[in-house]
Length: 194
Image (cartoon, rainbow, N blue to C red; front, side, top):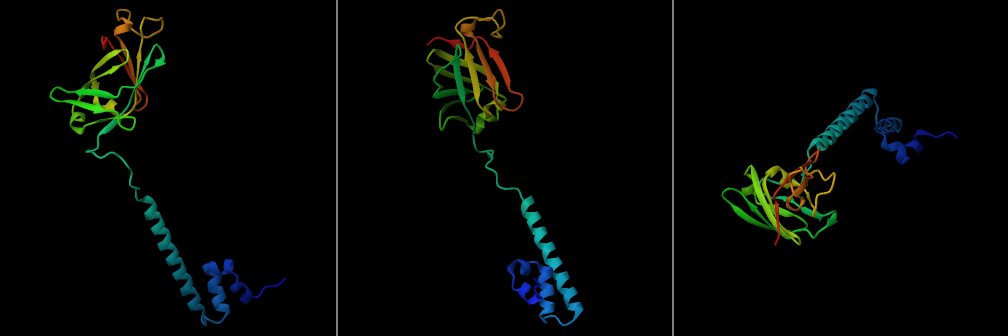
């Protein structure tokens, strides 16, 4: 089956290609001289270059990220386990620096640290759980950007990772899930009964 150029010019797939569109225009008599065809081809390539440059420029523009601005407080959560069983998460914590003491409440699953306290090198954190009061000292402010796991135990168990001179009822094993690798520490004494 033979197709004429006129029937191809009416085909939308064929007409979308700028080269074939220019050929069709020539065959239909819209372009009378060959130099006009070359001029149209140059313009098509010029427009294609501009469009591709604009698309590249748009792709390179960074999208607005919902990153925390310096005024926004950092957010972290605390999860506590006693002998491997999960306890209720604390609802209120107290953050202390050398000059400032602040209370933070659990909001949307995390505690927000005021920017004034994040300017400090380290903070003390205290809170209560059903089994007693927890007091962690000199926690670097970099760890206030992600979740914490705190493991408590009632008695020393082999392989617990506690030094021999530390009593399990007084110790806290803390794992900070901030960055790679995760970091942890053991503080003793950090627990007291209510």
